[in-house]
Amino acid sequence: MGCGKAPVYPSQDPFGISTLLETLEAARDKMLPQLAERRIAFLSRQHDRYVSTFRMCQAGRENLFTADPKNVQAMLATQFKDFGLGDTRRNVAGPVFTTDGEDWSRSRSLLRPQFTRDQMSNLDREERHVQNAMRAIPMLSDGWSSEVDIQSILFRLTLDSATEFLFGKSCESQIAATKQEAGQASDDTFLYGFDRCMWYLAERLRFERLYWIIHNQEFRKCIDTVHGFVDKYVHSALLQAQQQEEKAQGNEKVTSQYIFLQALTGTTRDPVRLRDESLNVLLAGRDTTASLLSWTILLLARHPHIFARLRCDIIKKFGTYDQPSTMDFAALKSCQYLQHFLNETLRLYPVVPFNRRCATNDTTLPRGGGNDGTSPIYIRKGRTVMYSTYVLHRRKDIWGEDAEVFNPDRWAGRKVTWEYIPFNGGPRTCIGQQFALMRASYVLVRLLQRFDKIEDVHSDREIRYGVSLTSCPADPVTVRLHQAKMEL
Image 1: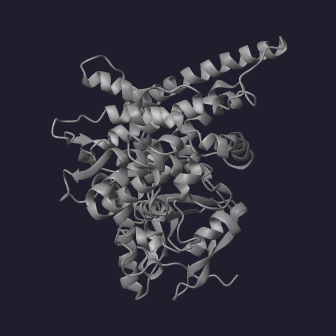
Image 2: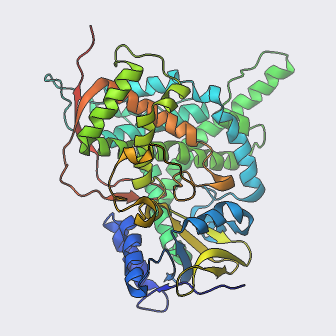
Image 3: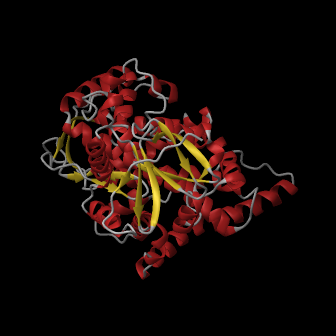
């Protein structure tokens, strides 16, 4: 088949325990994405060429790692049927983001109606959650806010929005947190449990076939907490489905608003299946958008000239905070510098910095083998191929010598293909891509309408990465915000 071998990243032992320890140390130091870059730099020096694809043994399993756009395109599109999610991901994470084949097609067809233009253009619901978030920012008499971890506010905002959008009823975590800060009782165990579950799932993936080691009492307790939270929505949806049937039989008018979980009850009444599908969507709807927004605020706080330019564009197009003009999906999408800013954020700080696929049969990948790395590579059935969006988005041979510089202007007139995959690609491209960008755009517009200055309280601190199944700033995004003067 004309294949060549890919370089091997060395391990100090035949079972890849040293590479596992190296990975765990980088994860503990919140520097996991940089470890992938260091491994590529090491092999590139060793082979006197840029090595973007290599073999590596970790915890008893040899995997392939790639940051080559041709290989990514093959796995996600041109050879889509040759690659699936694999047993490791299913064993590690159960049903969360692990459906393949017909189950995946069924889930996708159920979710698609959520993302019609009419659904996405309904911003009234989003505005209510934005207002709750604004109230969570404590303001002082001099017009500045006190120091506030805006990342936690953004994660609550997207959770509230996602639960209302998907379940028809918000969990109102922002209001609960505000009450707690005021000394009133509040239960935020779900948020803690959800985040810890994501950490445990990522840790189990790092242990490869030894994933079963990571299964302690805290993990089980967090799973129960998360399941209990979603089960309440499932129980309510099942009850509502039964009532809708009774109304339909009595020729009564039934509600026409599309709600994901209610639509799902038309396909299955299995509460476990309903819960698992809901968790898939909740993770996608809450963590990804909140992570993107957290990165955007951190970058705006560290690049005041970009903040000033973006705010100027926003005020010109959408008006001031107290006198906003009409905003909808089309208007947000046409705000060019805002979209360039989001593109550049997703390039340097992709929400999913690592992903993986598993060969469903003996196959090949187009590049990475041989002395010069241009020969195809043989992939036997069952072999895992990991790919890094983070590394791909920072390749200087693709993006230029300034690849690591944050510069939204690089997107003016730029067209990209497989070198830019923040939402994956091919048949499994994120179905909520435009919706996520619309929500992030709307929140940013409202924040920059209200505040005309932003300060990073820890501007000298190195940026670290909180990588679980998604990636957000590892340290709190602690900022001070200055409120713009209200128009008379």
